[in-house]
Length: 197
Image (cartoon, rainbow, N blue to C red; front, side, top):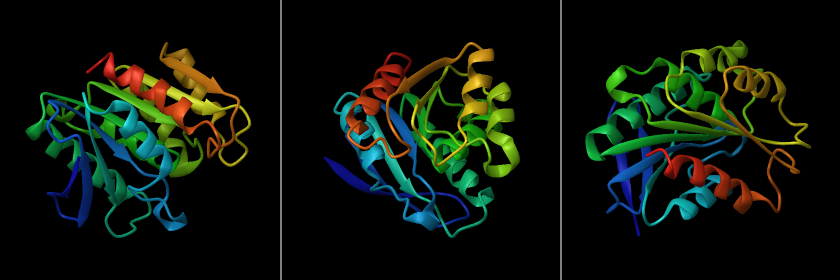
């Protein structure tokens, strides 16, 4: 069961809330909107399906393109809304959404911090490497999942920094899109988040 959500804030952010009757939720940040990324992304849907029905999932679309700044604001607004509606809130992001999620988790006020954060195929080169720096400022448990054959983004600096900080790091024999492995990636993500929410 799903229903639409308008995320309050200064931008037009529309989402879909799956399993709305749960008392815990994961906010899911989609991949790059200029390359077709949306809340309907297959990897976001797979994570939502793996969490259901015990944990809700808010999959949202970013507002008007704003070079990553507005998109981070959208994620922060989604976290704030989720904290007002649910007992526990986690955060997930895939690809560009992983960068957004890392930066949002590092920037939000204490009351809006996620209980746990999982990122899939995190790119180090977006936002001037801010995702790598953000890892040091995130206070919650973090999981980084990457594809060993991913040649689309430079994930290694994020993975290396996550290991240095003692965060959970998982690899799959997959490309950037996790072709044929989306369900396996979703299992890893959902297990990590559900154990910490």
